[in-house]
Structures are given as structure tokens and as C-alpha cells.
Length: 311
View (cartoon, rainbow, N blue to C red):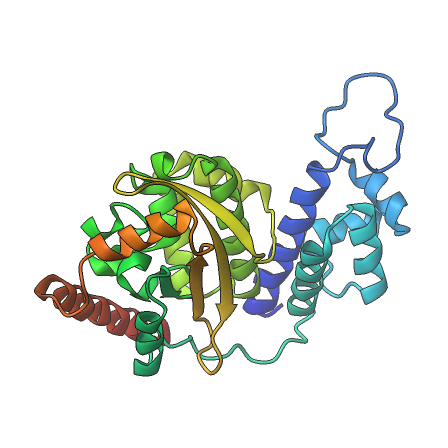
């Protein structure tokens, strides 16, 4: 078996095992028998029966020995596990990779932000906006986009990563009143990315660091939840401008694979908009000496990462 195929089969197996152990018999329409269940969630034979496959076949799937499940089997497993649309799509993608039908992996995405995108970030003021990589590294930002994540500017530019911030920066717990929800969504997005790009150096490096440094991350990583990006409202308890609730939007940037634009808005005339204006006014202006150092350092980090990715 080719190494890439084996890795992809293992990833499919991990996802199925994680979802099975988190699906209760009751939610699957089963009546648990008497006695103590030693297995959390569904048993393998229960899931196999619900999906209409043999126990032996499902066991091989979950052990990474079977790497060519048909689309019908994948859909049946998704129904039995009550996967939502994003999880179902992720399962299909893992099955494609496991079967080795996927094309050759594309080259690592560029981390260099094009000049017109930096100009776009500036024209979006006072709305906080930034560009992130697939591993959630901050690649470019406008003043409020950086200042919104209180304290992240104290880190060297190459260290500024939204996942790293959520789990390792002491201010993150105070900034987000719903920190538990925020980190769960963050880990699920990283899980989805890592499932589709299991050998990507930028993702494996970040995940390895967070597994080592954050027990909270390690616990969530083992749950293997995957979700898509959705329009959301976020409330920030910001130490400089107080409480503000903003509508967030994230979108893939055309012509720059792996880069996404994140932006926040507030209804004009509201206290949230006033707080957003204040944040933009008090944030360091682009073009200052510190900003120039940050940009130079960030570009140096991007160049070094790109060099590592292509090796």
C-alpha cells in the first residue's frame, strides 16, 4: 500500500471511530439492552447493521484496512451517524483520498499577500479585516483587524495565528465570553483542513504545537468534529473599547488558494459601531516604524515557511 493511501485510510478510520463513539444508541433509534455498555456510543456491530454492511467490512473500514468504500456505503454511514452536511461532505472527501482517486496534491499555497489585497484591507476601515492562511496564520491586516484580538500584537508577527491565540494567549479567555464555543469551531475547521491535507507541513506543525501545549486543544482534537465556515455574530469583551458584538464573514480569496479574508461589521449608529470606530482610531496606524518592522518580520516568516513547505 502506498504511504499516502495508508495515511488517508487511517484518517477515514479515525473519523468513523470518533463519530461512532459520539453517537448514542438512543439518537440512532436503538434501545440499549440491559447491563453496562463498555463502549461509548454505538458498537461497531450496531453501526454496521444500521448502515446495512457486514460487521467484518465495517471493522476493516475502521481499522484502515478497507480503503475503497462505495459512495452508497459512505452515504449509508453518514445517515446512520446523523452527520450534518459538512460532516457528510468531509466523509466523502476522506473516502476519495483513501481510495487514491484524488489527483496529485497541489503545491503548497502561497503565503504572500498581493498588494491589491493589502489596499483592500485599508479601504475596509473602520471594519476590522485580515487575511489568514489555511492554518489560520495572520498574513495581513488593517489596524482594527489586528487590534480586535487584544494582545496578539505583543507577539512577533510570525507567531500571530488565530488558533494559537485562542488556546495559548492569556487574554483570549477574557476576550470571548463564549470561549468554549469559539475553540470548538476553531478545532473543527483545523480538523477539516488536516483531513484533506494530512501531510501539509504548516498544518502538522501547528497541530503538533497545540497538542503539546494545550490540553484543551488535545481533548477537542480527539473528538474529530468537522464543520464549515458560517456567518456568525461574535461578542468581544475588549479591554480597550468595552463590549462589542460584530457580524463576521470569512471568504475564500480568488486566485490565492489557501488564503481567506475575514471581516467584521456593525450596524452604523449602534454602540457596537461606535466601539468599532474607537478601536480603529486607537489602533497603531499603518506606516509607523513598528508596523514596518511587523510587516518585514511577517514577510520573512512567510518566506521561511514557504521554503520549508516545498522541501
